[in-house]
Image (cartoon, rainbow, N blue to C red; front, side):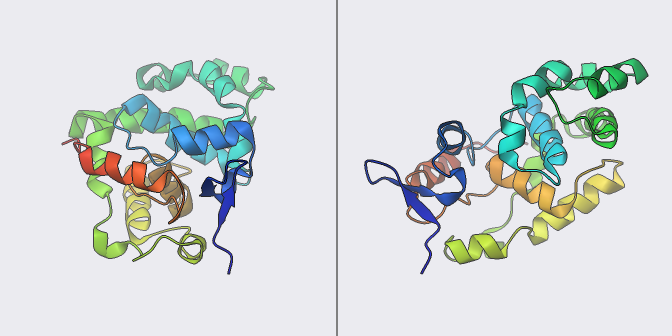
Length: 209
């Protein structure tokens, strides 16, 4: 049976999806699944997940610094002020994904994110309201469970809520990938060297309110 785990040269097991690539493995080990409360990082991630649509996360990861440069470090207030000149600048930037709809979406979502901050105090306080209840989670996060769940009831609900609030490029699959990466769920596979570490971080984590 395929466990979805791959071993490195020391025999340590990790989730399969980084493929042994050094930069991707570093992302797996040091970022993916760790709880995040920083609004800039949350906004960056949900925007980059939107840019990923139709592409691989590795493609986006390797362009992340270029995206940060193009979008003012994903500073909400700055991106919200982007205009047609900024859209043209981004469309001419070979270092990012030059998709007008996704560029416009990022600007729009910055404005909607400022609305959320005004209402809830922070993006973190809003997004962490959607941490799934344990009853929604699989009994064991094995390879079959991971493959079977590109969305969840909570990601569907959050996607609908964001769309009602005017956000774009936030479908349920995009939102679930965001939740996985930002630590709202722990989807490191059973047996992965990171799973227990992430569980400890989540247990010690103070949820924003």
